[in-house]
Amino acid sequence: MQPGVRALYRWSGRAAVDGVERDWSLILKAWLRDAKSDVPSQWNYWKREFLAYSSGMLDQLPGIAAPRLLGAADEDQLAYLWLEDVSEAAAARWLTDRYVLAARHLGRFNGAYTADRPIPDAPFLTRTYLRSWTAWIPWLDSVRSPGTWSNPIVAGAIPAPSLQRLERLHSKAAFLFDRLEALPQTFSHLDAWRANLIGARSVSGGDRTVAIDWSFVGMAPAGQEVAILVGGSHIWLDAEPDELPTMSERSFAEYVEGLRDAGWRGDERVVRFAYAASAALYMAPPLPFWLSRIADPARREWLERKCRRDAHEIVRGWALLLNHMLGLADEAYALVEQLDERH
Image (cartoon, rainbow, N blue to C red; front, side, top):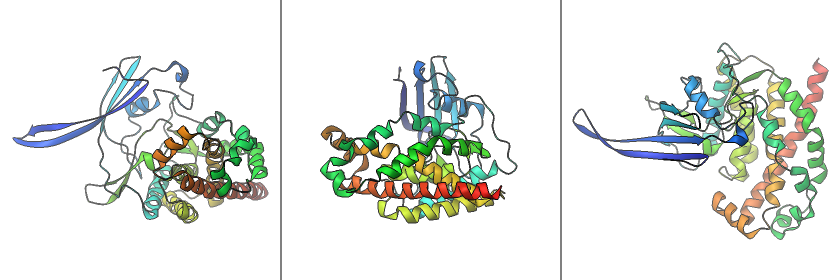
């Protein structure tokens, strides 16, 4: 078997165990060495997830879980992981309550490493993931291009684009990243949105959150993890757009409670700044970029398949998301001033 740069397979069958036939399944992930992402410090380093699993740092995580590692093989140019196949116990489409529960679990995960759990230290862990991920998106060009906003579908949902607020965020991005990276850092998944989370059950029947795809695992300030949960789950409309303000506030509140459950005793305003700034920086760049592609029939059709909604519904959801994220950006600017006054 020779995969592409990355490949994902599910293997299943039946086997005799103590004379009884049982169903079995596992997940096989494979990576072919990619020369374009072959530096461990790169945000998209090709071998990061393989090394994270192989190191043991994803065993027995607090708050959340990773699928169990069943086997690994490193053939230099090719790496394989055999992983537990975790079943979704929750509804395929999560309601707000399930996102809020996941936020609390993520808070317990991040919070444990701000308390007494040793933070992993390895050269392949990301340390400036959000800044690096944002850097590849030509978002200011999309913001300033009349074509982004003139398509009838976009103009119907966003008749008065917030160009000045988007340009302001772009001008402050480097400053906000500097402030985020100067905060105390904790061990983080950094891609924990709906597509990478499984609502599973524990052996005792309780709810647990299993996180898959650890390709961006690394360091981030407390608050960034839940920003990605909220923003990432809305850009592809996995979560209901009209629930965004409620989900955002409830998820943040439960995330903070999760931090406290794990022993964190810090300043909530610092976490709120990290949440607000991270959410705005995570979502504001790709939204104008994707809005500019609605005019392309092929891309619009792809988006409709991915989001399982028509283009009008997608753009309406993005309009709500953009407005909410720019509101969080305004909050982040104000929080910086408050935190500076405190010192």
